[in-house]
Length: 193
Image (cartoon, rainbow, N blue to C red; front, side):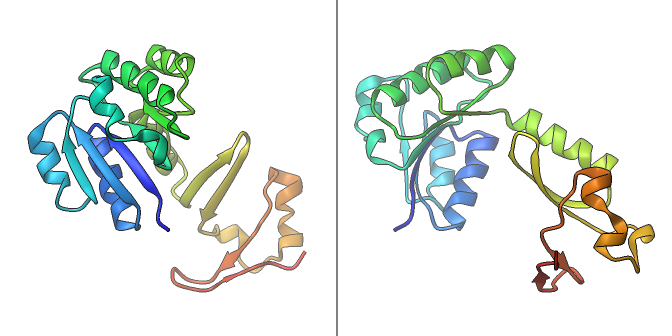
């Protein structure tokens, strides 16, 4: 069964999230106070509704506690609405509440009112883009937790023709190789210890 995800706020972040989740098979209920944005999202989500997410009665009608997760993607328009929506989602029993923060203070408040996870898309994109500029050999980088990343890189010319033992990556850089791919579409092979 596909995940049921409630997305509140259809600005750039919320709309992109709704589209991507829908493309990947999630059942997305998209909500915004702006009718034009809701109509745009209606083309690709399971259901789209014009609704004021700070209205407790209206929000309760969406039954957030029965969904797998709820994303409060309300952006720059109203920090107050974002905070109220987050509180209501928690009170209504949403099992996973992910809220968008615009700055550090907003992030602190969202944490205090009970958001399980907090995202700041602009800040996160800025960090990723900076890494792409600084480390051009990095193809993809996924943060798996504190001090743990899964990173796909192009090998450097100095690495060609050497074994993993010769490179001594764990000892020199704290890097453990978990897979090797030859070419952009090649099969991934697990290296021998």
